[in-house]
Image 1: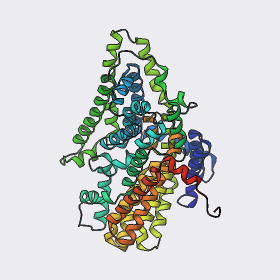
Image 2 (image 1 turned 90 degrees about the vertical axis):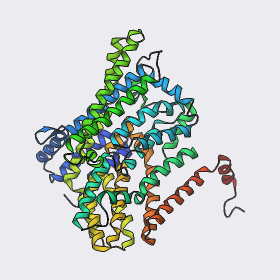
Image 3 (image 1 turned 60 degrees about the vertical axis):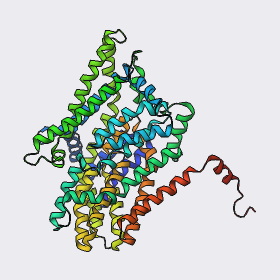
Image 4 (image 1 turned 180 degrees about the vertical axis):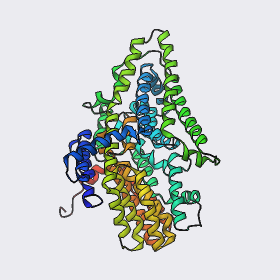
Length: 530
């Protein structure tokens, strides 16, 4: 069952169960058990051993600590504590009151979040966890649902990182592109030059950002998101009342009346600077003789940098908290409660991340991605269809496996090989289509760590984020596919990009129709009624 069509069953089973049952951990658990049984050919003892090893490997790697996973989990924990303490100091409320005077509309609050997501581009994990925390006070005040906030955060994390050369993603992708170019003797572009040339070819990035912009400007929703947004606008409840207690730990805590904007801004600034500084230092020390920005970001230990930045942010938060202790506005016992509730609020994210990493490792052993990649490699289709086909397959692989980086590593060499064997001039568009498809699949996969962290950073129940985001992600993917089809027909990158822009304009005009216009259309006699 390994490396065969049966390898699709466990990930699809987990994803379908998530969407049907709305119970994320149960669904991931079923997928983990199914994958282990498929790998072990239904031998119970071996299957149980595989399940144990998949969870063990989340924390232990090659006999030592799996620092990447552990540091990410600790950073999530620290962020939960920092968020709770900032709220207790009154920083969240003060920042919201300050920003509400400057960001005066719901559209403005959403656009502000989008801009923050674009500006913080150095790492998708950092982006997902921090942008939501910064924007949440403002979007809450403007009655933007947490589901919408999580969608905007998720749409500006990986899609931005994948086109940013000075980022953890850029360094990784440039390394893979360099290997592909060397294998096939491509000398017309350097690895960095090829990466930069592929930016306008990554149609999903522009489609995803465009859909966010259109939805924000038109203030029109569709799919499950409409339920959340209508409730937020009409009642002010940005969360489903049934799940509110699970993610809004700060609402259980006392709040100082002496809160200032600096009680939120200063910890966040030190957090951001601490992470960026730690990324640079760790990369600089590991870069060897080549001290270029690309090499530094490529060698940086991002997980360690997140942990260091989180510790710096917590220390600064505690220093600010001491002012409220001295003033008698808060007590030491309440500080302890803040630590407890802040950490506890992140436990759902902890569990989901651990289960997602476990199922991802088993899916890797099952060969799901390798099987799908082999289908692309063996396809004998019209050359103009290859970019859109690669986009779709890369999207499905990332969706099923929950990892865009794994999809990059798997499909970029294959796409390069197909282009070299058919039309070498297609190598950049083919590689760009892989990047676009992998980001799309990662964007909407319920088992993707960036999807999980976007819901965590926005304090949104994970299943709410997944179900509300899917229609918008698929809209962007459809527009992207049109762009690649246009490119395949005409052979010019800019024609495909123009098709993407025109499609976004059409979507804007369609959604921009006023309620009066819609009502008039509904009262018009249908064909056959005249």
